[in-house]
Length: 386
Image (cartoon, rainbow, N blue to C red; front, side, top):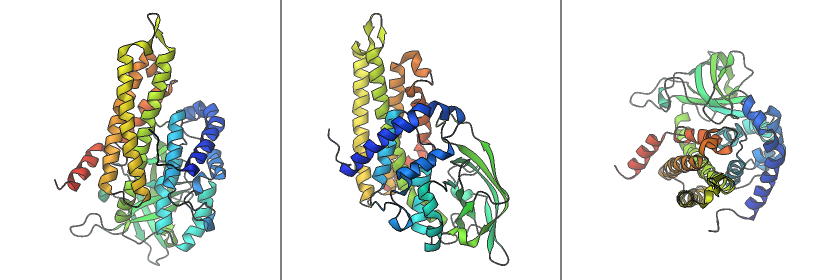
């Protein structure tokens, strides 16, 4: 069926991204996977291409595109199609940028957005802490205002920070005040921390099951001095800020799950058409046809859910429950589809040189990060009055 979620500008951008991936990413992607990160200079190339400035207003060096999230969805689809990744760049644009655009002061925007757009300043966001997981209100990292009121003193640790190794500035969530009586969520703030600050340290680069080109790190803060001018938004209001951006984050994960499932079907179809068993093409067996037909039907359903959610998001109508539903459905079904497609590859599907194996590993985390499937079910059930 013809998709209507994208316009001619999106499709022209798709062609540009597809060509860019073919020339700049595919030939060196195996090297990136072995290194466990994309080269830092690659982000400058994305900046030159305009990827980081799509939604940034023109006065700060961006393109000022309204509804820019659909362009990022195109990137996600094209990366999945080619079996590659742009590393931590999605965190830079999809997770960090909304906070900068909405909560930064004019002075902060003029200071941060131009290097954000060019790729000279890469960003990450640090919420999760060892032992807290999804319980953000239970965070222990603190930021105490100095006696002279000029800076905060940051202490604590974060983990599972995507892009944390290469980031130049990290949006760190920390307690600037103890929880209020009856409200554990109060007292949390966001500080945009310069990673060259004394006392800021990158710990282990974590070895993950998948997403090998996305650097993920542990961070620690020991008496890090953060100027009050680097407080993002109002002090103590961060928990509410985080909740407002979660629908877009979860939509991004849903788009990725759909795109990866669609790519898996393509990879499996191509493989079974080329592979012969007992003197005949694997594609000729009825079981192969039925499995791929089921997978195609699932992908069609995922596409419909994602497209409807993308339109709702662009219209400002995507609710937390809508995003949770889209994420739950697409990530759970993608796991089934990709597993079936891997099975059709036989033993070769278990080899990391094949993109289906990388998809299998990469997709597993989609049911965990951005809120687990169990959390999504709780959100949906609550919206139903249950």
